[in-house]
Image 1 (cartoon, rainbow, N blue to C red):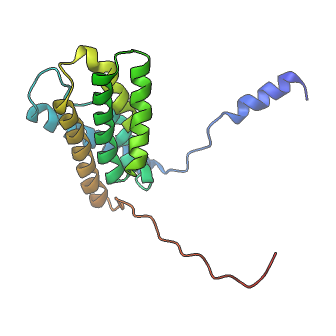
Image 2 (cartoon, rainbow, N blue to C red):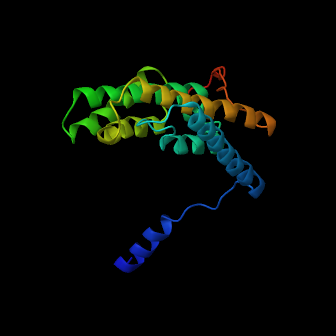
Image 3 (cartoon, rainbow, N blue to C red):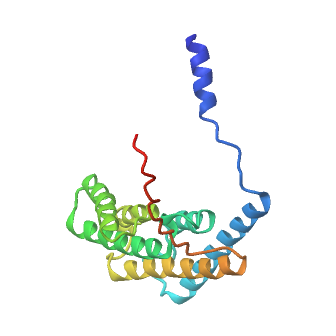
Length: 191
């Protein structure tokens, strides 16, 4: 096979698969995400004091994609969302306070958040972004601490509570509990 043909086939393999999600379901997900982020932003903007701490953090957008678009994923379950963001914010704040190196701080924040999420069985990829946000935004924010942690927890909790209601109102299951599979009995056959 010629180089040109290999490149052409290689590029073709990068194309996404056709979506198997019906347009009606896509619309339900998009509306849920819109309303969930709007709900979270509105409450946080009016309920939190104005100041240097943001009232809504960008990683909540990624959480909304998981919670509304992939609600059956273990990464999108309420425990993972709330605890994953919370522990990641805590790790990020600790890195801001303990590590002054601008290259080491972000790396430690993301890796530390991942380790903490593993330890708490709360793996939620946007949590890594929360830890990174804490380190990168620290120079522009007031002393990062409990107010940031509280904002992150409030964001995650409100988005999750809205998702619980929205999924229930639209006839979808959330949270989704994994099935406990039992191993099938051995057939007695040997290979």
